[in-house]
Every structure is written in structure tokens, then in C-alpha cells.
Length: 108
Image 1 (cartoon, rainbow, N blue to C red):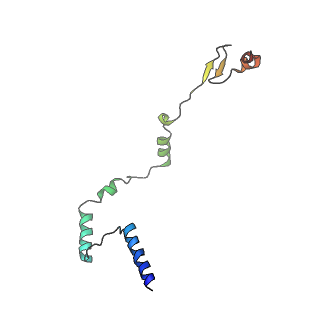
Image 2 (tube, one colour):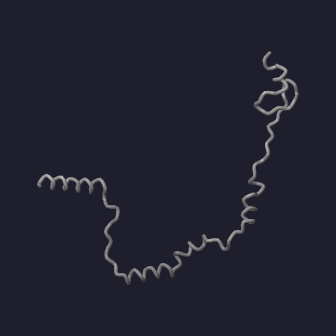
Image 3 (cartoon, rainbow, N blue to C red):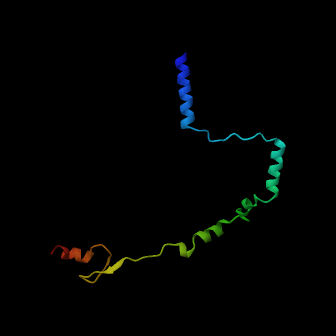
């Protein structure tokens, strides 16, 4: 019996030490005071910033498509062609020239 009480006391002590309460006790406020406070907050304009973030009207799909597919947002065509230094034909950069490869110039 005494052992269980000691065990429970140690357990409570460890819980309070390791996991403190996150919420502080608040004073008791009457519901009338709460109603007056909420009406004062809404009347003084503190919550008006919420309405400023709302769009004025719905954006149509065509307008959204125009905005998202703007020419400045599209990828630019980059051509990675280069003239081969051995034969003078066009080849892709960082690749072997196929005409030189077929003729066996790379293996000599």
C-alpha cells in the first residue's frame, strides 16, 4: 500500500517536472463581459484586414489561363547544336559527331 503511494507520488513529481502545464489558469469572467468584448472587437475594425484579402470577383478560367501561360513564363527554346571541329558538320554539344564516329576518326 505504501509502496504504491510512493510510486504515484514519484510519478506525479516527474510528470510535473518533465511536462509543465502549457495553459495558465485564467480569472473567471462573466459571460456579459465576454459578449461586450466581442462586440467591441468587431465594431472597431480590427477584423477588417480579413476582408481585404478576399478577391472582389471570381477569376474566369480564360483569365486564369491567360495569366498562367504568359510568354515571359514559358521556357525558351535553346538549341544545343555545334559545328564539329574535325569534319565541320553539325552535332549536339557534349556528344560525338556521328559522321566522324561512322568513319572511325575517334578510334585512330
